Image (tube, rainbow, N blue to C red; front, side, top):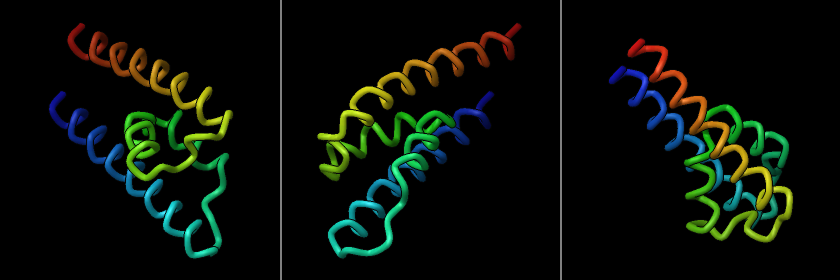
Length: 90
C-alpha cells in the first residue's frame, strides 16, 4: 500500500510540473500541451497535482472547462483511491 501512495504522489508531482511547463510555453508562445491532454491527466489520477498547479501558476483558472472538470476529476480520483484502499485492505 505504501508503494501506491508513493506512485500517486510522484504522478501528481509530474502533473503539477506539466501544468507549469504548459504555462511557460504559453508565456513564450511555443507549442502547447492540449487542454484535452491536461484534462485527461487530471482524470488519470493527476487531479490533485493539476488542481494545486492551477492557482500556483495562474494557469487555466478562467477556463470554464477546467473550473468544472478538474473538481469532478478530484472527486472521481478520491473515490477511486478510497475504493482501491478498501479492496487492498479487504
